[in-house]
Image 1 (cartoon, one colour):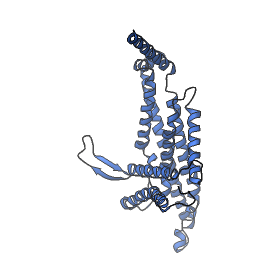
Image 2 (tube, rainbow, N blue to C red; image 1 turned 180 degrees about the horizontal axis):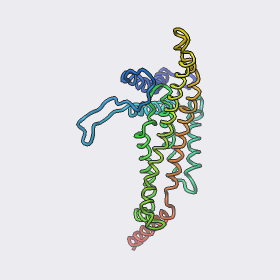
Image 3 (tube, rainbow, N blue to C red; image 1 turned 90 degrees about the vertical axis):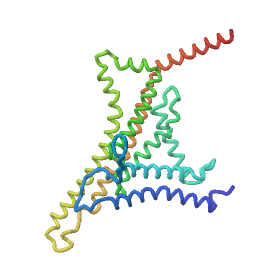
Length: 311
């Protein structure tokens, strides 16, 4: 077997294809946005563009928006990055990419272990899921740095993630039995049943709107700051002749400083918060006592059935 220090042509070709897999989807999304964006005289704050609309659907037209296209571009990019980091793995790390991959795995597994795994190890397989949430959410929020609409700035995207998490939460709540789950809505007194039902559905709603609201507000504030700095430049330099009067002095560098917080830090922080809420809500959904009682009953039934067959 050839050493990684002397990469074969096949290895280099695969590396090149994986790098292209990371770059080309985002370039395609940028080109599509440039072609489909209407001309504008100034700064505008708008939602995702609608690229295609197909009629003839049963309930409503099928709409392909900028959020969907950018989401798929991010997913393919993250997938390509994962393949690139894990290409050519060896028993002992010999490349920086393998060290990076191992560091990511260790950190995510440690995060899941600290927040989900208590006395029982039933959530050990959730590390890839949590890593995918953080990776896709983080890259989606950072898409605005290359001029794309952030998919996390569309409530439909974050609502889809929240619904998926809600289904998993409900799955674990049902571990104690359907009857116990339904009775739980009547506690502490039946009068609280409507509020408990509302509280049950408040979890995905709050997760979706928290992520969407923070990312969208950051994007809006960044645009408003850029517009204000443009006006300030025109106000101060407007009296100068020619090109000097139109020079956007205060738009140079200052928006980038604000972008570090509103686009980079805030986007990555929201990805981490969404992942943390996912872990805590799933881990806290398991009714351990009811689940243990249910498993004990099943075990007794199996033993009785085995005893009858033996007799």
